[in-house]
Length: 419
Image (tube, rainbow, N blue to C red; front, side, top):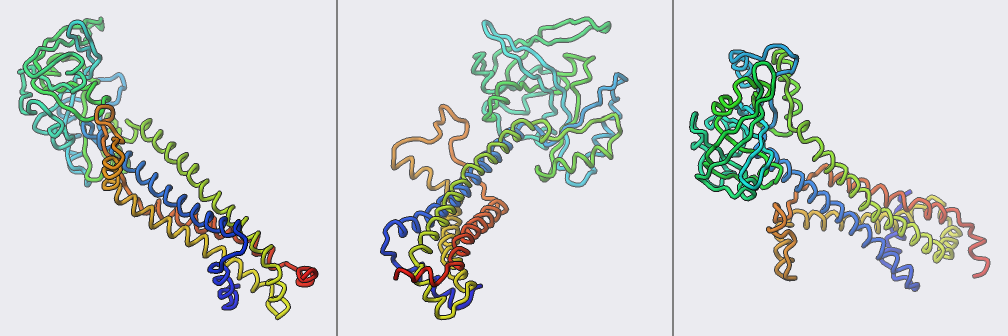
């Protein structure tokens, strides 16, 4: 198909200036359209990957990669010795970076005239840095201020702002507890604010209140369903695999849940958005590919005389087919290559381009007063780039087939009848 004669004539048609303006315009529009579509796909997917990474990092800044809880079977709760054995098994599992115990209670934070539903989480201040980034998130106070018996807490920035709390203030919690016979017996506990943390997400800053784990257990001594272990892995993306391994190694009394299950809604929504955005942007490439079809059809019509002369001098239909496939592939694949290079340049330099645009046009893309994320993140994933490139190459290649086949079937006598 790609005979030297076909390649020579096809490349010459690419370089030649058509006397018909519309044919030349469609040629350049096709090339630019393919390039813009490919570049837009790479940049948008890289930015969405960056936002997904940012969302995951913020969600996991105070949440572990996995957690172990007791199975609610109605029987007796695991003993302290069983929890210690479970922790020993987890620490001995390859891929585990740290383990820390926790205890959680649902509560209501009160400070006249406001109230907020919160989660009182008891932690071990010494083990907590092994599994979360709470230390890095604390803006006021220190994690070491949480000591057994101190009844001190570290609250989220949103809670502190909503209730007007600062370090040294008292905060009242309404905690639902039950009597030994199962009757509800809510109690009020006054705790002292020892610090404020800010993770950068309202789902965290407006929900969690941290205290020493012994203080939380003392507040609700009979409550066992809020106890557990939190785990951090060396590779966050291996959480599902390692959690499945832990399920087989731990006794059946324990249940393992990883972050992909806890935050499935967030990442399912992100995945759907990314998929729909990819389909929409890929339509740009598809439209450009149809432009290649239209352009080649017009070129074939314009070159009917040339085709007839070539056929008269002995060129086979296969060589004519190769001429127009060469022309279409050069235009389409040149557009794809330009798009790949342009898209990668933009995706890798978003951090430089964003402040330049903000300074040049005098606006801020992400206002810090409105958004937690103030810069555009970007994460170029090579499987995405390869998939986009291969799909674009195939689509533009397929676009050349119909016009080329039509050219190869042009009857010489019919084309020369009116010449």
